[in-house]
Length: 116
Image (tube, rainbow, N blue to C red; front, side, top):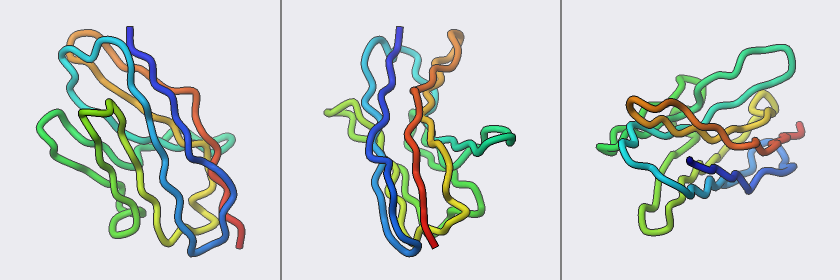
């Protein structure tokens, strides 16, 4: 089993910054990729950024140049540095991990609210 616990969400003014953390525990054997998703009410969960086991990163167009995904293997933690936040970035942010041949795991989510 894999457990993912997000932290770092909160309320910030437009233009501000937040750093989300995702602590990973359990078996990550066959880890394929990890990522951050976000969801607002009545909309589908969407990819924000992901990083593969080889370190390749991929960003949604609307966060390129503002958000940075990273991971610290020694701490078993993934991060999402969010700069120049906009009100439209307001959402619940979820941590995701995919293990090959096993499936996907999700954290419980952390709320990010950006005020104008």
